Image (tube, rainbow, N blue to C red; front, top):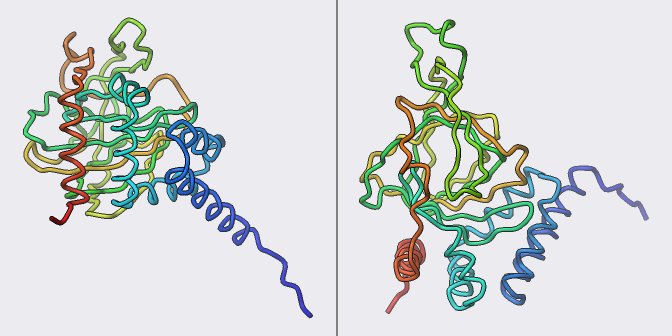
Length: 266
């Protein structure tokens, strides 16, 4: 009898498959807290393949509907969701469903009738995986250089460094001067597509105010407390303080999202 040695690719596939299966088992048979612990364990080393596949399986409408229902019916757990969720200054609802040491699982809802006050170009403090649950998402990708090196094709913007520390109740941004941003490409992600965004990638969402899109974001372990923002103007003080929801509004927003991505038949 011949025995085939397991290749590295096969080992990786088996590890990912076992990880995803264990998370789904925890989702349906465990508590919200044990699910957070299981995802934390899976993402401790920022493996992009695992990040991608865990996001994909949690984006399955039936799975996501079950998760949200569990959260809404867990008063103690839901209170933490309420404390972490708010209307983002870049123009979308940010609902933090799960949060651990190594990750956050967030629903982003764009184009729900609210005006986008300032959609800046930015990178991130972490790698993340995203799946389009409703609509599509368009973004411009940029390369930044110092303003003196600009060409006619570059967009001159104000460069700020964002500090994620919100102990004062608002975040801090530090002005770093002018920067030249050159458009590299425009990407469009359609319904059900998933993708990975790397921390260094600079992008700007270009959907219009009324162009609705819902995404599920799974962030990895932060590699920094800071990231870069590029804007046409300075940040207003009121834009630095998150606009948190009350209980009634947040529940309504979650239910509205679920109705769009997992409509129930009467």
